[in-house]
Length: 186
Image 1: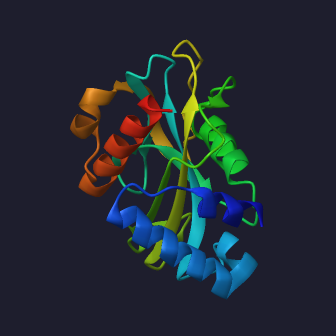
Image 2: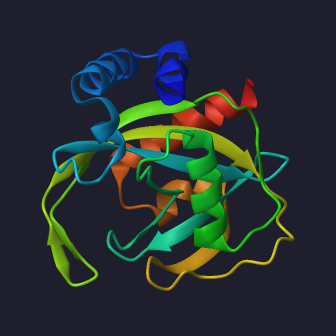
């Protein structure tokens, strides 16, 4: 399992990451491939892209319709075990950018994120957990941006020191700060 090997190689820097990594690996061992499918209604793997410009002073974010806040890009694995591919695909779909590359092929953040019950495409989705795997992606600011209207209502570059002015999710802001520090040390 390529994705499990990547998760096992990830080096936690905090107690939170150490605990989340341990729990995610145990969950993978228990549910095997089902953890890659959203049909697992308790917890499933998602892959996010934290998109930075080459000078790493801005991040490309989308205004997420469900959460009504500016956030990173990402999505469900939907059975795909190549989580870097999923992060790149979602980044392109959600922002319209074409030229994007990973800063590294290694995972930059592992987090267990709560998802509150919500309505998506007319159907109620019960509360569950996202076993979030994240990568830093790099793209130029001159890329043409497009809105993916069924998921977001805006796409824009935000200065990294202004993220907290745009996001109303304190837990994610802390993850973004952690990712920025790691990205600058890669």
